[in-house]
Image (cartoon, rainbow, N blue to C red):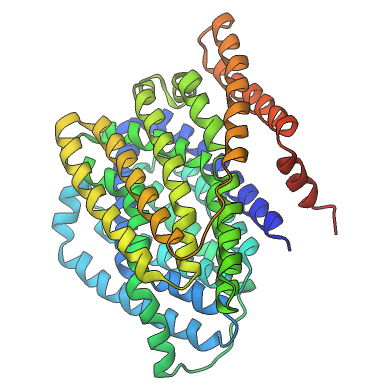
Length: 469
């Protein structure tokens, strides 16, 4: 399967999952309100951080070791054992501090956190193993399975009045189902690991864990800190804006996931220049949807947010800032992906260390000073730090031809789209359905303009059509 087709499969899978989640979120927020949704997202953010502590880079290390030519079964066994041991330790910690956890969330949810943690860690491990076995497309397809099952169960939970507990239960069951589906496609052999296999995992994980910590800090540090300063309603507004911004980043994430195993293989075969070429390819299409998404959020973001309920319109400014943050971060992430592919997690560790320090410091200070808007600004500024340091670290090892011309064509196409959308905004009423319609019109006009402007884009589309052998 071509890398482009793999990326597209990942994009379609994750986009489908996001659409299903989008519909479920609308139903949840309109029926339960921003406060309950905010509590739910605060629980999920806490669980994500516990997962980061539990995985400790094992997820990345398993993908890396399995993607290399050579042994796989003993590395898989080693990783599974480490994850299981981490879950046991974290369970003891959560139960020991259950009162503090319940007080932080505002609801008695400590027991449910254990189920969320188990399902989440198992799902992450299986998808990492599939990616390491060069089954990125299969791993990507697990996302819509998880999100669809979760969304259906959560909608039913809301319908039957189960509230927050129903939302959490739906999350757990969906994670278990998706994990079981992934296990069907995972090639697993029984082989006891040796000490060198443990060393192979831990030597990579000791640096890679901060990369996972960094990515989670980018996606949920603001939520955790917001829980200390603002009410759950504002967390609900913020999370809706973040979810919309993250939908726009799906394609760039899919590209990075598809490229990593190939970069890892190229590096193991002693071809670092090919890794640089892969990074350049990733940069060419990182902003494919984020760039027009940023322009669109400026023009119709307020109308789109009203889909969740009129109160969510308060997050319009935050939405724009978060889309900027995702755009900058995803460019930087392509360089970080390249560092890990080159088997230089030590350099990625340094970049991520700088990011984490900046992210935590900026979130605490700016949220304290400016409230929930400060969280978005902190996220954007820390993304700039990541992009700059990641670029410098990677280009110190491998030269990269930055695809500035291709990126500029995406901005030109987005500018043309802006004219169309702005004209529609001027003549049409400020209604939710109008906003949704303008999003569709804008997307079509952007892609058509890009097809006309970019020969590379046309060639990439033709080259990766599923009908071509």
